[in-house]
Image 1 (cartoon, rainbow, N blue to C red):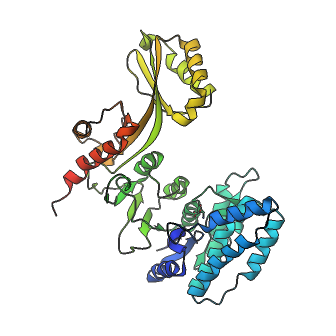
Image 2: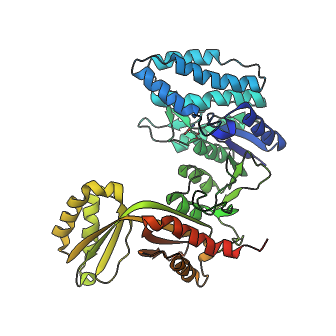
Image 3: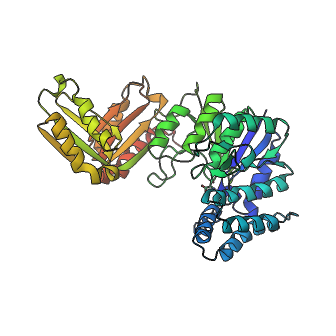
Length: 442
Ligand code: ASP
């Protein structure tokens, strides 16, 4: 049994957090490969080391004094080293970093040092081998990720390594230039390592107890999702639910390795299991609810639209020509509505409308702004009678007017459009209907 364990920034923000991570790792000897993030926030007012590094490097790049800030970053690490009573000095590393900053080694190099240094501490603390991600995670010359070479390098290197720490978030091009993934990218490294060592499980340790059925800023103490499929997760993540970097899914999903989201501060909880498929019946009809505000509906009407071949293509062409991607497109016999992101559309709206007018001569084009889309996702909806009925009655009781509904034939996801101002009430009402009213009486 091999487990790859990735710890997020808040799980490694201080010596105390390192100790929690350490006991989690030591408790199970199959936890052989560890992927750390850079130290995150110790409290809500704190700054992540990665952000400090970006700031520090910006100073260096502008030729301004950066020593003081670099000193503060060093203090963060030294505090951890002292707290863990390690015999380790990062003086040489900081000398190199200072030189590299002065030589303008690049923003990505700068940001990557957060993980690099935390990895060194973690390796020393655990007595595991340190494997620099720059040697095993490869990027192409154009900066794109090189999946094939990475998998080869990582699996070769880790084959001869019983236990190792591989810092997250970065890798390098063949010429040695350091490249980072996008923010939160240590999740991706964890997934790549899991695939390379053929792990049985990829554990992603963070500061929440898994994916929640709904956003805790809207619903008080929402239930944790115990098991979610990759497909469901993708739908929810796309609509704003975020715990895991989106690109972290692909490597392990292809390899059939499940991901377990766990809470470093509550290791006794099972967290959320993300799997390809499951025979586990979900606790509720729905698995999760997520949504986003800030959409515009472009309503187009034209008599006999339905029989006009190529009408839809011409309309969508107007959006494509202006570089706007559309989100949803419910249609009627003589009407068609396109949902787009308001911030993308706003400045180009007149151009798009003019183009639609010229290409399709509609009877009218109306715009409705400040709309929100809510995705109600669940494998349990498939074949369950009355789900949409319950959804609408919940919304009706909450006095929420539904502007749009879109349900794919997979029955995995029902999207509804509401006014921005009804967004929170709608989510609460859906949660009450599908979760609260289904909870066993305690
Ligand atoms: N430290 C990086 C960030 O703050 C990467 C990560 O934590 O995954 O985005």
